[in-house]
Image (cartoon, rainbow, N blue to C red; front, side, top):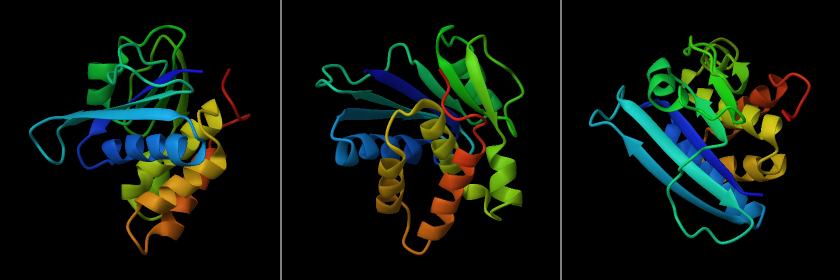
Length: 179
């Protein structure tokens, strides 16, 4: 099953890292194909940021996401730029701490930034909370695969915090998988 996933937020939220981790989970641990691309504004931190991943059981011939079926929005600006035009049958995971708008498609509100700050004490892991929620809600990769990919990707010494963040994101998905 082919999935086109778009992550959006602002620089410094780990938007690109999230896509890299998801692609790594698919390729390294689920044995399927993935390709990742990214776009970010001229500002390293604070500017608009977008990253995409295509995951498929067949080889991927074109690397650009044209029509994402799964979106992860971590800022209002990102939503306005990349989420407003989401197709009606898409699934969107929204950081309800930072995104005020709501899409026409199915969506799930995850207070990732608030949880990262208040529960885990580090706002920097909000993206990992969103990854946990994404995987639990969609089943796009196996939960064991995303955990291994996170451990491969985060800085040494932060593994425990990041796994706690991933698990917290999974806990925040009410009732499990979305459609």
